[in-house]
Image (cartoon, rainbow, N blue to C red; front, side, top):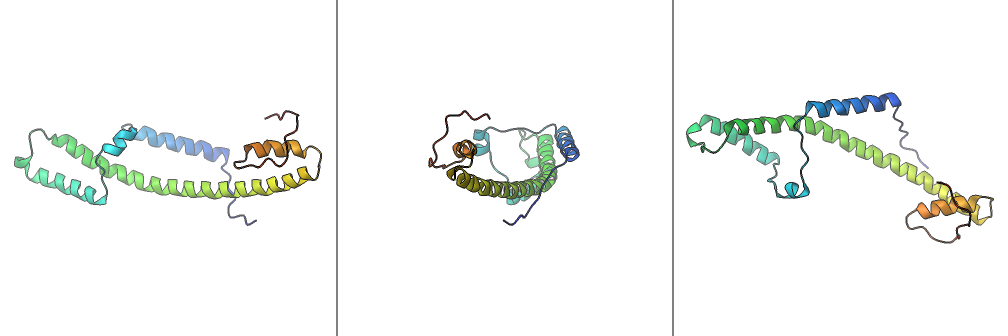
Length: 160
């Protein structure tokens, strides 16, 4: 088996990461969670919409006589600036999340591959009558998705 990654996070690093995440959360006190309905029904802003919103705000500032009375320009400005500032935070975080996701996928893949190699060896040992291996195999077999029932579980309870 080729090992492409060997990844361990030190206790100090875990503590520092936790503090860094908490710092980000504390510095963005206005963050919200939307409902699934909100996420589906709210208008979405992509790159083209971003340019449209920015230009609309600029033109509104330059042409106040056409601004409807019910349009709160102070809130329009806050939302326009806030969205631009959030994007500056979001883009590098998305890149980080992508790296975290890819690294998690790779480490998980290698761990699962190792577990499957062990499981196969264990299955052979259980079939060969190696003492105690039927119990271990039965425990892992019950936890493995798509497991077969080629070896019946023994009557001894397995301690988790």
